[in-house]
View (tube, rainbow, N blue to C red):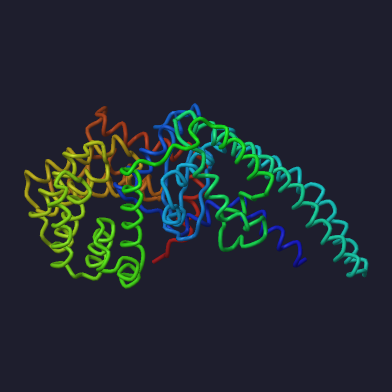
Length: 457
């Protein structure tokens, strides 16, 4: 059965990759999200998707991977961003994943796996019968054959699907006036990673198997494009280097950052990375000096303002931090994360007027991101400090609901419905939460299990 387990694990990796990747943790950053969104939206629109309906998630994982799931969700590992040599490479990967999304390939992949697994499971059953009948050698041969045939059936389908998606990606790149060279270069750099070779090191090529024929077909499409020789703009190249430096600065050990970006490197991305690394090691004075130099060069950069405010805030200087977060929001008023940082700093000042201002920012943020659990938490804190306890309970219910903690959401929503004036929008929302939870059998089962796990006194 060891062979069966290996094949089963392979299929599980293909099917359940999002869940395992999510275990690494999603990260949020206003600058990284803005850059990837600016590059992605034209691709989504070229694919016939509504850009605002597609969610882009960044996973804190240094391995190279990208994938999509149902509900128009795209996931990019930090590793695929830092390994991109040009924006065009990263945009090419995004275009490829968009092809899967637009083509409905997730549902089709499920069907292909079912078709591949049927003969495999039947043959596996014969192998088990042979083992029970006292012929373990015969059983091993049969099971091994089942493994091979099932994998061949599935990956034959996958290769066809990937080739079609390459063509779709090239169409999207061409429709947006961009070269398809990026995706081609990305594949050529890692073409030795075939289905089973190096898959653990480069998980992207486990679910995206390469072949010479596939790369040759893409090469032909790219060469025939009128946009073949279009290059990335200096501005886009700079943006990529800046978000790569930010990822390294925040997610790598500080010494690694200092080694990758030595003092001899005076470029802006290198100074950005070193400033973040100094902030990470609590060298606050040096970090503020370095960020201040960046701000002097670009006072209208919202992300330099944000970082300067963040260092001040986490140094216990919320009053000073407010002006920098305020400036960041003025420069990028469409960014919910910048608005959340401003609200957090305003609340920390513990001044009544600032808390009232924070409530306004949080309400606007939550209109953009109703599932932002930290936003709901900060709103509950604001209402509590204003002695608006019923509204604080409703915000806590919203936070718990966004986090999937339905037992806690139900408890606070029920309390809010008792204390809020009936027929107000807030009362109706609290009532909606209780009704939705009551109407969903899956949620009711989860609540029942949570109650069973609670310690009894």
